[in-house]
Image (spheres, rainbow, N blue to C red):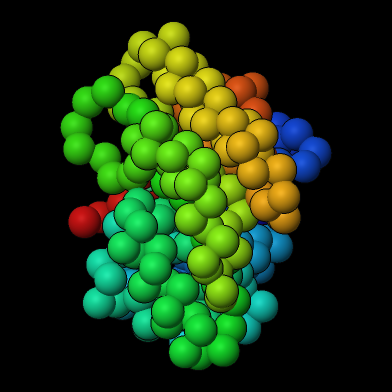
Length: 222
Ligand SMILES: *Cc1c(COP(=O)(O)O)cnc(C)c1O
C-alpha cells in the first residue's frame, strides 16, 4: 500500500463515526489526488479557484470539491456548480455574491460561514458576534440560492493545547448559538474544524468535519 493510502487508513481508523474527512490537496499534484481517490477518498479541499478548476477537469466526476481558501468576489462565478461546499464564507458581501451567481446559474450552493477566533495573525472570517448578529437579524432569509450548512473555523497556530482547545470550544459555541437563534434554519448541521496538527482536539470539541492535508499528502511545495 502506498504512503497516501496508509495515511488515510490510519486517520479513518481514528475518526469517530459521523465525522467526515476532507483531504486537503492544495499545492499537491493531481497524481497524489489519484492515489487518494484509488484508496477510496472522494472529498478533496482546495484553496485556490484556478487550481480547483484544473484538478476538477482531471479527476473523476464523483469527487466532491470543498473550497477552503479566501474567495474573492470576482472569482465566485467560476466555482458555482463546481464546489460542492464553499467552507470559507468570510463576509456578507461574499455571501451575497455567491447567492446572486447561484441564482443566475439556477443552482443552490452549499456554504459554511467562517468564524474567526484565533488570537494571532490575520485569519479571515466573521467575528463570533458579527455572525450571531447576522443570524439574529435573520438576514439569511433574503438568500434564495444559498444553503448555509454550518460553520468552519481554525484554532490559533500554537503548541499551547489549552489555547487550541479554547478556540475550538469557542467555534463550537458559535455553531450551537446559531442553531438556537435560528432553529428553523434547515440542514444547519456541519461544524468544520481540525487540521493535521489539531484534529483530535477539534473532534473532542464537537467537530464533525475535519480538513487534513499534510498528514495525508506530506509537506506542500509552495
Ligand atoms: C491548508 C488548510 C488545511 C490543511 O492543513 P494541514 O495542516 O496541511 O492539515 C485545513 N484547513 C484550511 C482552511 C487550510 O487552508
